[in-house]
Image (cartoon, rainbow, N blue to C red; front, side, top):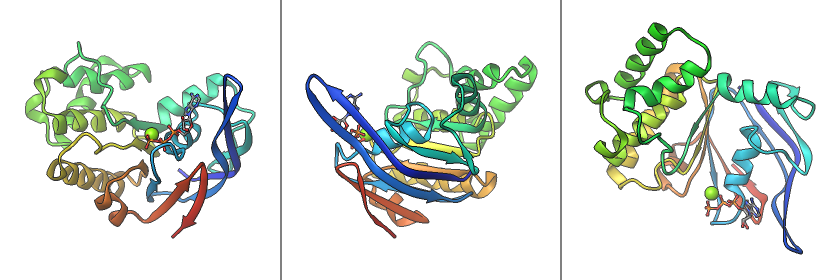
Length: 224
Ligand SMILES: Nc1ncnc2c1ncn2[C@@H]1O[C@H](COP(=O)(O)OP(=O)(O)OP(=O)(O)O)[C@@H](O)[C@H]1O
Ligand SMILES: [Mg+2]
């Protein structure tokens, strides 16, 4: 999936103060790229990911997906693209606690209206791909942090997304587990040709990235 933003801006109003969380950001991300977005806390990384992931709407500026201007898309179209073409990974995994690893991974497949058999087979394959074939019936609290993040990655991959958006996916993990998770994400990029966009403070991810975007006070300061 190719992403292009043009003068992308998101302003929040809190009481009578105004926060320009994303300020005039222009970026172009090609297909099958591993992209790191870095910057200090409060610099706008999550806000930018929410915009690119069609989870939020810009105050001004535009987002193009594969050349298509998304500004006039209906909410239904935005939801459909999110569900069927994008995958999301969060710092705290966001797994549903009452569901097993398998059921968590099945969920987005079910939402895409695949048959039960298809969804089960697919979910098992994905859990095997992230090295968790032996943990399918565990619930999140019965898994380690690294395992939980693997389940979240399997879930993010459930509908063969063209893009994965990850917000500090290794933030809660020790450095060894973080490295494994990063390797897994890199593998996914190679295997599925998925574009991976990661907001991170993790040096290892920054080193491995094809491109790094650096945010400060909502603005892109370097692009190398
Ligand atoms: N919903 C909101 N309402 C008001 N202000 C917000 C909202 N979301 C974010 N902000 C503000 O926008 C700025 C950017 O926040 P954002 O969460 O994007 O930063 P971040 O780079 O992801 O930080 P961190 O590394 O701590 O996750 C911050 O000043 C934050 O307080
Ligand atoms: Mg954030």
